[in-house]
Amino acid sequence: MRKTLLIIIFFQFSTGVSYSQTDCEKILSEEINLTFSEKSDLNTLNNTFSKLTDCGLEQIDVDFFANGPILATLLVPLISENDRKVTYQNLFDKIMEFKQTSQYEKAIEIFKVSNELSERKAELKNWEEDKKLFQRLQIPNEYINEFYEFFKQNADSTKTYKEVFENFKSQKKQFDVPIIINDSEDYSGLFKNPGVLNYSDVLNKAKEKDKPIVLYFNGYACVNARKIEEYVLRNDKIIKQLTNDFIFVNVYVDDKKQIPEEQWTIDKQSGKTVKTVGMKNSKFQIDNFQNNLCPYFVIIDKNGKKIKERGYTRDLIEFEEFLNITE
Image (cartoon, rainbow, N blue to C red; front, side, top):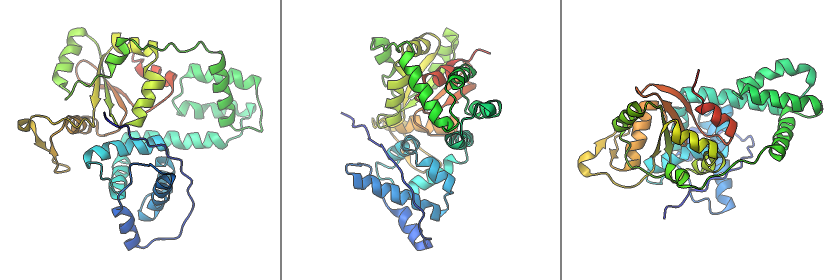
């Protein structure tokens, strides 16, 4: 039975002294302990990761990637690519690679705005201006309006927007209709592993059914994939949407099952032999969507044109908005 890699990381960074080039090379050559069996293992990772600022990583990136789910998203494909032997150099290179993508630009913008809201005092008189920050977070207007109604009735200028928003979400959970959970075959069938992605067959099926496609790049060792399945994809409404409105395809990027030897290829970028289901699926993701995030969802029309993409979220409303592709 495949083991799920547990990556629950809490970072507390402190400023340190400058490190020489030799020290930096030593740090980057260290192998990351991926078992996290002891608290000391986490502390070692925390402390070492924070020192990457002395190896050329910007402080904003250390703060951003120190987020447990984000760091886990980067580590999962590295584990598959490097036979579970991952160094800080591998992680550093993956971060620098991700920084060149459009996903990074969007994510860092949201990170900065979130930080600003977590520190900004929630004053009703400034709402029209502050509302723009919520919109930059790509929160649906309907949800923002609900928050505003709560904010008007519970205004407290001593609290930050983060504190007020947490109170709003807590109250909303208390009074909302409970989410309907579905454990039917429709749900369990969504996440069956179909093996190597046959993209041409998927496109043909989409044309035949006249439906768009949702590709879900998933992983057995991807903690965040399990979280999004628990908090979002188990929702009855989401299941019906994925089942009825889309051609939904689960794509595992860390499946160790070997493909026939005659189908092996050499990855031109890494020089490695692509010989497993996961490696082949991961290569398809990188070649076609220029990232190897996990989890990663992409909506494609029946002609193969990308419509939308999104990474990890535990927000049901955000994911519903993602699936809404009607103009």
